Image (cartoon, rainbow, N blue to C red; front, side):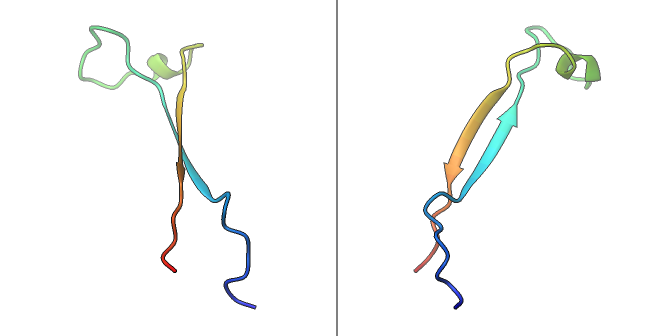
Length: 49
């Protein structure tokens, strides 16, 4: 039946890495290829009834 799946754990996860302090406005791939800290935010999805 449609609509009977468990959606309590549905989430969107966003991951990002901050650029180094004093970084130029031009993108550099090297900023994201090292062992820098990856930040993560989990957003629960709330469905309309």
